[in-house]
Length: 346
Ligand SMILES: Cc1cc2nc3c(=O)[nH]c(=O)nc-3n(C[C@H](O)[C@H](O)[C@H](O)COP(=O)(O)OP(=O)(O)OC[C@H]3O[C@@H](n4cnc5c(N)ncnc54)[C@H](O)[C@@H]3O)c2cc1C
Ligand code: SF4
Image 1 (cartoon, rainbow, N blue to C red):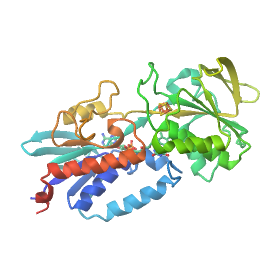
Image 2 (tube, protein in one colour):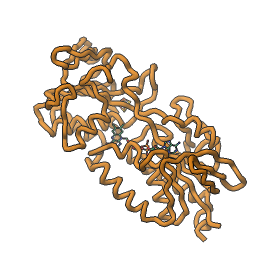
Image 3 (cartoon, protein in one colour):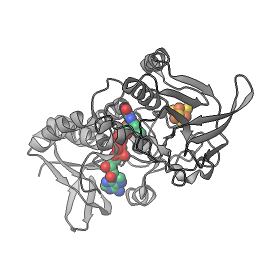
Image 4 (cartoon, rainbow, N blue to C red):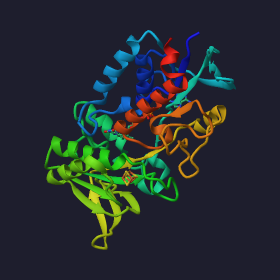
């Protein structure tokens, strides 16, 4: 009987891993708990670094994935049990009870976008014109429909607050790595709608690493303003519904009460719901500092604690799409080797 691989999670990383395994010729099963494949990526519009719409990429990947005869897709499905056997795993799915044996597993269960309302000082959910970055993405991807929630007018000013749910002892201490870059990307998009909109980014450090630095420079050239400081409090001006942000500018050491039409919380990433339980089912280790799955430093994808399990994308920590895709391909290759390489195709 031919050897099989299982991919758990059908976001961009899981899709890519299943695509690569299927294209090599491996019988592959991909299991996604949501109704549709795509994860957070399917909610995005124009994406950094190239500005291409996420839906364009997703459509291309899904068309190829669905054309592969050797890839079976289960949605609205999760792991009921995974039992280690001599050269692989016996798997039972729920709710349908389907069972099968696989010889390698790629875990691509991704992340949960941080819920900004967990920081009461920032007012998300209470102040109408405080939104999070995923809500802004929704506005911009539907025909550049940028509107102030309180009165549906084009805002005269938009202010981003970064590191929301990251680099903070009260929430998560790690850096979510992709939020500085999507923030400058979104800030540029707002300026491109109308350059008269006053756009400010409040930041602790700008971590637009590697080639993404050019996006930061382009944002500056478009007139996006940068204010270094972590806001302590966000208020609503009751008659105008404008948002007031109290912040210390740590460069000038001045206390500022910054007024804006819309405040956008640039949210980071957390381990997704159910990842503890899945980790236990699979017998894999979590990183103590972040709570995401731990990977070997030798290849960045091998799960610690199990030989035939590999982690792809945000399941091992926050990553942008390029890094997630590269890791998904690496995980697929490691799974292929675990199955026996070319011998598994005979
Ligand atoms: C506001 C915002 C803007 C962003 N913009 C950009 C951008 O412009 N460019 C860029 O490169 N990156 C961007 N990112 C990052 C990007 O979202 C991720 O890099 C990308 O979506 C890859 O995610 P993933 O597949 O690893 O995880 P996810 O998207 O989280 O996918 C994981 C999948 O696994 C499923 N799953 C979870 N648990 C289970 C389980 N137990 N069983 C079965 N299935 C399960 C989930 O339902 C989900 O479909 C942005 C992020 C945010 C929050
Ligand atoms: S990437 Fe930027 S916004 Fe995100 S946590 Fe790190 S420093 Fe903060």
